Image (cartoon, rainbow, N blue to C red; front, top):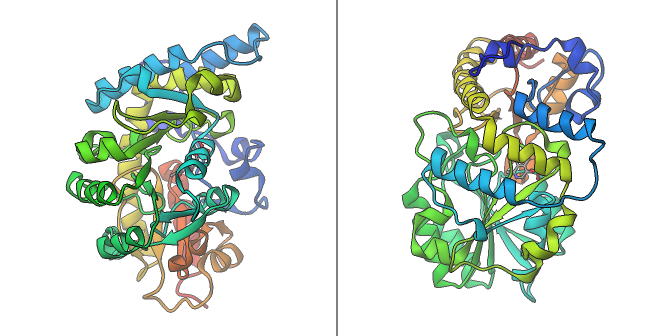
Length: 391
Ligand SMILES: Cc1ncc(COP(=O)(O)O)c(C=O)c1O
């Protein structure tokens, strides 16, 4: 890769199958050698130079102890929020933790109360189910509606859940797996409801840096006074800059928002991953050109995927995402009767995530990871086409 300030997508995603198969992280190491992996949300990308420099410099110092401070990261995140999103975040409203899962689990335990229930809106990020069961809380599922048009809140269902006593909503925006970005108006209506029933909204916004160009995005804490009063936002750089294994999560509240003692920055710093903090500071602070290229690439991948599916897997329903690199494929209108990921793994040697991992509503669906080169995306969908129509 050349060391210009604005890398091209061709350069960033130019990694051979051979090199990717040598990676020990989950996506490529957990499939057979003849399988093309398009499952877990890792990208086939070179890390941003500022991140590798930060890690190499720590390695050169043999510097791998507990984190000494998160101040650099908090400043980098606040600056990024202001400059990139026009969102003003006070550093004292930010706290750093080991990952998003830990933040959400602590908050769910704290706020779910004696009835121990948390509302989720499937299909939704598969690990939410693990987070809930690991926190000892029961899911109250209020599925999104009209999925073929992107997915919308079921406000009647949400109100019924709140009326029945649920006090925590775990929101995913931008949404994984649908790639949906909820409008300010939809979020504001949700905030009014949450406020009316005295509920807390945990807004998982970790895909926000990858909102596609031209799409308006509203952070929960910018939506309204009701949203600020009810919400805590979850952020990470790990997903958008592709270093999930390094671990670092960020919680943000507003001046009036809740902040339980479990998230008190004074007592959680040494729980965090030191190298995750270094990488996240380099990401938010010094890796914006890289991010712009990757974001543009994913918007283009989404268009490519639309055309490739029409050519090779006609009949599948795909609503292009507004953010990130995940695609939700719905086979319910096709002749495929088998669980889609099992079928494509066996017949096409392509690994997808099964739709049921994201909730029972995903039974005839699969999630495809577009976080790769244009050339490999074409190979993935062409391979799926060799098994289409279903045998
Ligand atoms: C919506 C969402 N939240 C949280 C996570 C987990 O992020 P991390 O492992 O970096 O904490 C993911 C990972 O894909 C995700 O998609």
